[in-house]
Image 1: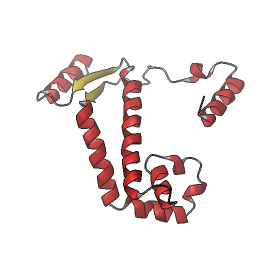
Image 2 (image 1 turned 120 degrees about the vertical axis):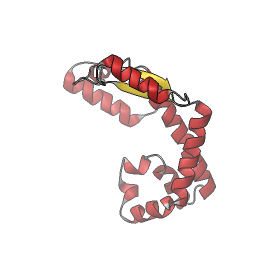
Image 3 (image 1 turned 90 degrees about the horizontal axis):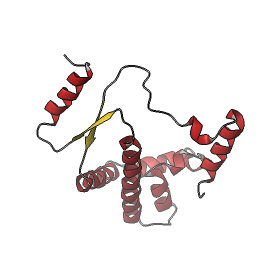
Image 4 (image 1 turned 60 degrees about the vertical axis):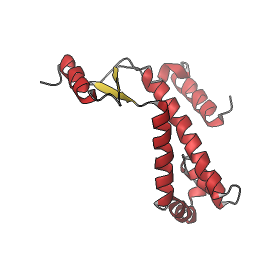
Length: 152
């Protein structure tokens, strides 16, 4: 209910297709023979990796990049200006947040996004999930491939 863009999109799909928005969501059918393997990273480790990645992007000049893109019209973009990290840096550049808060909010939003991605992919029955911290993960992945007939 709080996402106006999504509501408009659902109404457009319903009007154009004559069916509900949910009918247009992708299914789990593959267009070619594939085997998907997902690596299950423990939540604390994933959270730590996300934080390190965001801090690394910041150190590598992300704020300067966004500042340059702002001069090129980033704020006028309906999608790019709302992207993870960009929205938070724009709030910092506008003086709404201190830089540290913008970085912390980017970490928080990225963690939330990763959880939504995980929930989405967990429902896909085609994915074989393996523990990323299992010392035998490579052997287990090869066994999955062999079982599917895609590895010799």
